[in-house]
Length: 482
Image 1 (cartoon, rainbow, N blue to C red):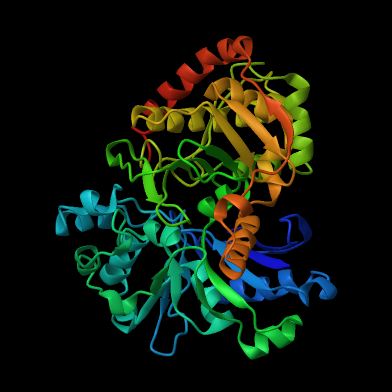
Image 2 (cartoon, helix red, strand yellow):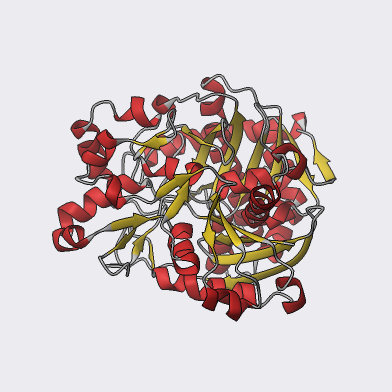
């Protein structure tokens, strides 16, 4: 048995897999996000620890006792600042925090080779600009900072006592020389840091330590090996067998991601495409990233007084796509690909007296699809060919949304059994590789296909004019944002 733990934004998920890779148990624990000021998004790091224990302890004790290895996955980019006592100095600044836009410009000015070294444009979501913001606005906290860890790696510290990270998650800090898969002294210096502030780097399946005695005893497990793991997107990709050049997935979680594996490092920062290390040695990947995806469903359901996502999807399906003029721009937390715009915000447009909740629900599903189409265009402009995407995340439960997405994106969508498990499965698979030495291609297989949705040309044509209005609406909205 192998344990995978995903430190997400809205919750922690723990899964146990058997020797054949099947998920035999799942447990979750919720997390909340604090937004004390506009553009801010924070969490208390110790909440991750509490939720991790809760999620793991919800699993069958008999299965926990058989676990042979543990792999961590987690939300990327979060800045967890630790003092000399390894305790957090302030709340962690999350991936969807947009306060450090000015610091991005300062960072690229301080190191003009930034994009060449990292393969990425500096964005407020990355970790390095967040530290530059702390240096500028909370100098006493910055001066006291002795270590900076990503969310899953803070949990690792609590579980094993080790400060370590993996290549895929670290690539999202803007401190990594992504082609060399090593910390960049130049990028660290641009934020007045050095390698002493950073964790040790490992490839995803490499063992970084073992569970502390008290943790292992509390979980009813041996002091099993803990592997480096992966950022959530790379881990999710391994969970659905995306590890070879050209294979891709669409993740519909809190955020939305189109992820394509690459056999070589293929950066394209001009289009705000992310180019990161994959969780396996010698493999990289590209992503288009959207800061709000399934989170738009949760928000809109609450705002419209709808019981939950399932009822919201049902309302949208009732009226069907392209049912009216209503438009939704899904920028609740700003946007990355292709706009790199942390200040843009969501909007409903085209509402009239006749607009119903169901029509608004339809517009939300369409709006997220249109945003993903903008991102896919950026990947295609970078020379990436995408014909098929595996779908993971909570949004994968809706076949109706899948029909809209497939038609707007112009790609075949493949839905897999267990695809909703997400990054925790990838963490467990990395643990299996690390503990057993089995080849990645043998462990990271694609789960059985449960459904395939092909693009519908008629639906694509019906939505084409709305997408054109959507793009014009972004251009107009970007001129009047605060």
